[in-house]
Length: 217
Length: 231
Image (cartoon, rainbow over all chains, first blue to last red; front, side):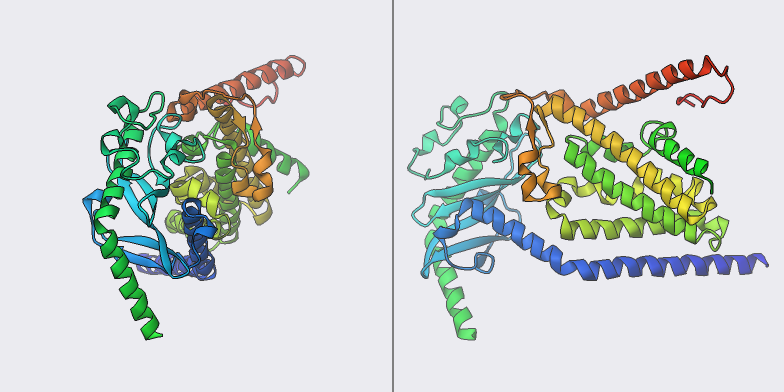
């Protein structure tokens, strides 16, 4: 066989394996796609349910969303999706995706649930890169600290006390880690401020959206 | 293939030529995910499955693939297999998939797998190749689990935490808390702990090897003793 033939034969074999490999991946992707998107849906719903227990709402949380423009107070650089919970057609709470930009080692992603009366329904950290054993106490699996936000609001405590204790506020810091809780407290407070400013607007936008949904049906 | 040969494959995979302890391959994921036993076990089993499947396929096609293109073909096979495994884990072991994250696709870059394809599967029949992949995988998994156990006990004071990620809700109760109110030992959890732990395991293996060599070489002189691990 001449060199030319060898090259062509090698190319063909390589091409054949490329096709087989791609086919294998393609078939697996086809069979698992549905299960994977269902898993992601369930995982998101589980997180939302940690903040808002089932009895606090009766609508389909994952379908009741609003898209809001990027806002510094939420730490969002891009448009974000918020989840609207309602009970008997009355909006009961909203869940905001919030990014605390000033974590010890990078941004901390959180979900902040705020009841319609302005009190916090709950806060959860979704992902972070804080130091294991120190800053990671913001995770609910490691420490109950994050539950301390429940029922807090803009008036409780007063604005000057929306800080960790070291800064003269009322929230605990962790031994060996002040920066992480400081970042989280700050971000939660800013989210409350955002909610306070835009509450009426968000409610109106959501009602308009659901009306147009009904009309389309 | 004789019985003796399979014994040889088993011994090589588990001990004499262990991927992690002797060949020192695939250390990046090994050091990165071994914070707990379950993480180590998860990555170990994914690697084991990849090794068996890729060794099997490489062995089947070994006569058709021309030597000059064998490496790209092996890489292609391994990459496809790993991607398929990644998708399957995403679908059926979602929580564990989230924990292991980036290290599942990184199995592709575990040189241990390419090394077995090149050094063994491309030269041997299907059954020995499958056995070799399985035993190498088991050897790798054992090291991951051991290192995970050492780091979990020292770092968190627990064993088998998060077992439910792999074995379902019933496994919540498997977690052994060895010391209540354990303050945690940061060094063991962070990457340096992985390096130190790995070094200690390798040292222990070498000590055992030396000891066995000494005891076996006394009666039969220095006839057929295996080479020391450091070669």
